[in-house]
Structures are given as structure tokens and as C-alpha cells.
Image 1 (cartoon, one colour):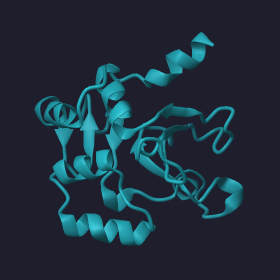
Image 2: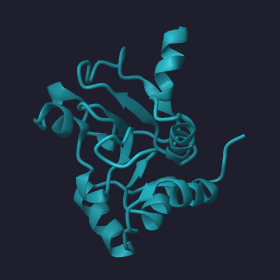
Image 3: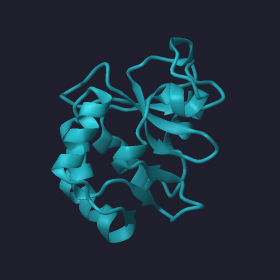
Length: 161
């Protein structure tokens, strides 16, 4: 059973390293900059904390959920160029995993009013054969990340196939 977003946010505050919250004005400015609206999970998260380090603090942080100011197109973050050959314009980095890898938010589609998240393995980006969907929503991703003990939880699923 999925954990509610409010319980996940309480856990982030209690057991991890959240950043200070974003203001409603910062959310509005972010949405104007990127041209898409935060879904309900992301809006709740960023009003609670404008990014967070999960499990450990930097430099050894396995999951660093980016502050709004650092969310850019995946192709810019991973390949350094804002060109279609480096992936769709609708994919944005959301969480840094170290070594140039990210969790990517796909704003081109929604399921139950939530954006899906994709593995942003930089060596294979943007090949969908290797950069698969890893969560149907941010709350699903956050819950799995909090239970992961610092591992990229989706890699074990991929190895089972």
C-alpha cells in the first residue's frame, strides 16, 4: 500500500536532510521558467522542502532531490546541449544520483495527474532500452528511495528480468 505524501514528507524531515521550503512565489516563477506545472506530489514536496538529501548528506548522498533552481532539461544536464538528438525537451532532471546519473521527470504525460519518473543513466541517455520508467509518480519514487538503503532500487528489478 502506498504511503501518503504527508507521511513521506514527515519522514524526510525527521530522518533525512531537507532544504528550507520554497515559497508559493518561487513555485510560480519555476513554472513560468520551465513552461509546465508541478503535479500535486511535487507541489507538496517543494512547499515542504525545496530539495533534500536522502540517506546521507553530500558528498556521499545517494539521492539528492534537486531544488527548483537546479531543475533543467535532462539533455542539458546530461549532455550539455539543448538539442533534440540528446533526448526529448519534455524530460527534466529531478534527482541527482552521483556520477552524472539522474532520476528524470517526464512532463509529456501524466497518469492519475502525476508525472512518471525515468532512470537517467548518463552513459545510455536517452536510449529507452536502458533509461526505463522507474516510478509512476514522485510519491512512489520517494517511498522507494526512502526504503532503498541508498541503493538505486530499480536496478535490482532490472537484474531480475
